[in-house]
Image (cartoon, rainbow over all chains, first blue to last red; front, side, top):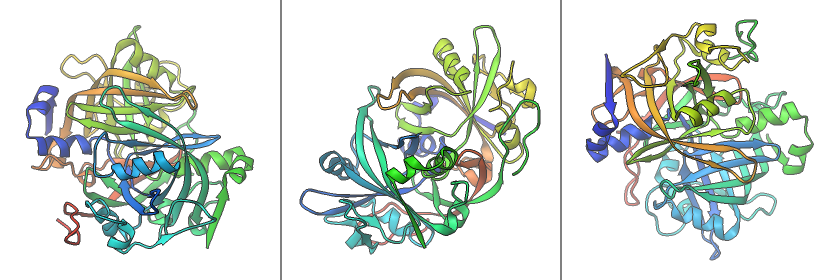
Amino acid sequence: MIKHFTKDEILESDSFFRRNLINCLSGYKSLNLIGTKSSEGISNLAPFSQVFHIGASPPLVGILFRPHTVQRDTLENILEAGYFTMNQVTPSFYKEAHWTSARWDGSEFEKTGLEAEFLNKFFAPYVKNSPLKLGCSLVETQTLKVNQTVLVIGSIDHIYVEEKGLRTDGSLDLNVLETVTVSGLDEYHIGKKLARLSYAKPDREVEEV
Amino acid sequence: MIKHFTKDEILESDSFFRRNLINCLSGYKSLNLIGTKSSEGISNLAPFSQVFHIGASPPLVGILFRPHTVQRDTLENILEAGYFTMNQVTPSFYKEAHWTSARWDGSEFEKTGLEAEFLNKFFAPYVKNSPLKLGCSLVETQTLKVNQTVLVIGSIDHIYVEEKGLRTDGSLDLNVLETVTVSGLDEYHIGKKLARLSYAKPDREVEEV
């Protein structure tokens, strides 16, 4: 059975129901803890699921920030300092990662027990236990006219990845790295590989490679 | 062992290696087939992994389009007609979904065997077998200065979801819907739930709910 919602039905539905439903529609999302540091030297850590590939050459990453959220510290620190880290999450610390979204006073590292790590004199803190960490610098921001959402674009200046998950062709085995994916606002999953598929051409069916 | 790449090392690496690596850094991505129709009446279908939540009230979705790709038909049809559909993919047709990315002449529906479906007089075609389908209308586009990537923002006007995956609180059980997630350019996975976690507060550890 298929359930159909029109836009009017969505707008008239309970706000809690609507928020859950709409946040689930984009499907599985990546999960990163973004690490920043304020000018007072306070480290900050917050979970983000709105991260995406912008370009490979030069390597660029994009993050969408809601107009006003508890994670506003992260955006302010990025705009102020110009540096941030992105740290993928594993099952061994996804609960602590979720907990960083609470309204803490002071550093989320100290409060949740996640260990900060400073690498190669980079300004912003990494999450020590993360198997895939990026050190990024701010390139530009753009505000979406439609609802004041802020798109931050960062240059990927450093990549740290556990070698067991790095294939010779440059691709990453996320199943081996055990990175976590999130759906909606609060549901966490690991991935289970179906297959890699051959480059698609009209003259032959795609194959597992 | 941790492998470290600096930005210079990334830029100097083989272009195939770099493209694979950078495309994997954002982690698991959602997979949608976007359905459109040209003014000549030709249906088009193409896979996209750069889809994200923009807002719940009103319900908005965002899609990032690369400046010049084989999927350019999709962007042109959206700009011309103002309507598109988004269709989540399952293991039963993820190979056909991948195959739609080939450079076909004519409609990808006919060529790959995926069945088109027109619902409630909506202009653009849906994928019949998809368990989660959205009917969207164009709200605005924004071009990123940094590399001419185009961000399309759509209003979610219709939601069709298989009832077995819709919970009473509005959230979707993606494991039950069996939606597929993609990593890098060509690797497909299903999700396996770890847990849903309670709303994060400073005064208590998060719990499974």
